[in-house]
Length: 291
Image (cartoon, rainbow, N blue to C red; front, side, top):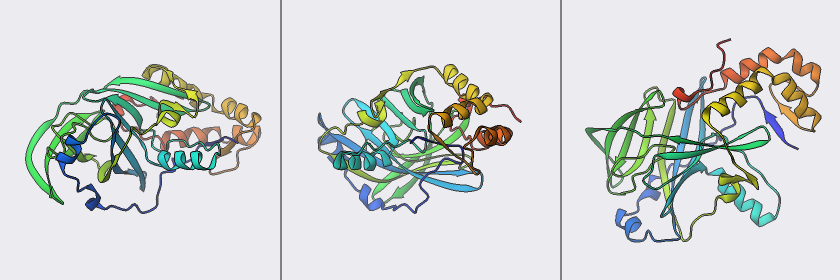
């Protein structure tokens, strides 16, 4: 049975292992062995400071010969369980930071689940970086500082030219080496590289990224996506009534499994949507009303 969660996004809150020793792979190893059919995977801890809570998730950055992918690493574990058990397990992103792009490109395709549908949104995300003279050492790597403004936030990144992939977590890229760490000026979003893996063949994400377990991603624009979310917001009572009538259950701070319960709590539900919404790109934020 499908559940709809109206409370805070449930990021993994367990303590994450941060073993930088696992990153110690010589740059020449990546470059010389980067051949067709292999995936270089870099894992980042994503920490989000939201409404007084510290929320955590592990994110995967997969770099193939032609394509870059970024997604919740939990999908890998769920995919393995699904294939080993034969069970129809389905997982939904806790971060809403699922995307693909071509290598050396700033054109991103973001994927998102909403209600019963799966969508993809294409954006052009060029960044102008300002290099800083500041450097620091992380294990055996020398990192250089760089800054940029993106999505209505100011960002600081630390990168190394010793691993010459011009990529990084989320949409961050374009520096002359792999981004190890990036965070905004308010320290709301903080990505930090923790370990790396080299896979012998290209990792197949087609079940959970490019599609959602067989459901094709429908292309829409940012404007169309905003309209969907605002229609949901303003018509939440009817939407949730339809959802429960189809056998779904609603997860909230209160039991909302009848029409009367949902109607009574409409304003609280709308307030919860607003309060729990924290866009990484403020310039593309859904224009929810102030109250």
